[in-house]
Image (cartoon, one colour):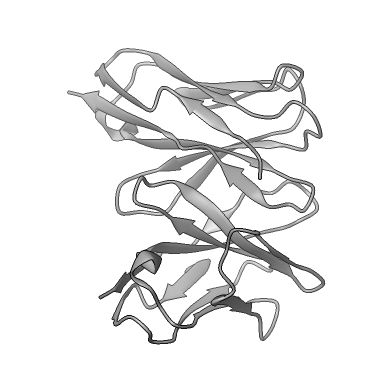
Length: 113
Length: 111
């Protein structure tokens, strides 16, 4: 009965490959997010998405793209992986309208070799 | 991009000591201020959502205050215990409901 689940937990891949990270929430939330944790443990917003609006942080390379098949899922696709993409990626969800807190997944550690 | 700052960056206290740390955020266009607790090898968990100037919230030995006019929030821990060791994050949403996190305060409570 995990609220926000991400798969895989670990992902090791080579430069140039294309990979996806999946995220699902069963909380009935209307907004989902992707965050990147950098080497200093800083959480940086990448995307937020509800069923009406995708907001992309301007610093995110266009090799990264979110895909939402339905309200409960927001997957992260990364094309042409680079060494600098190695990080922990966190998915989160919330209800947009009532200042509800973020609920995070357990993170996916991506290592690009 | 919003500038959310936290201080100190890290803190070591003895078990039983009380401590506090600060989150600074833009005082214009305020919607809410969130506090999260992030234990090693886990994901961040929400502590408080604060929305009103002068708000004070409490959960056990942890409490938080909010000053929206000057753009800061304090988190207090009374009688710190080793299990309080974690990184404490504050987050500030923009008009698009994107949450910008501070760099966190890493707390270590020494038994």
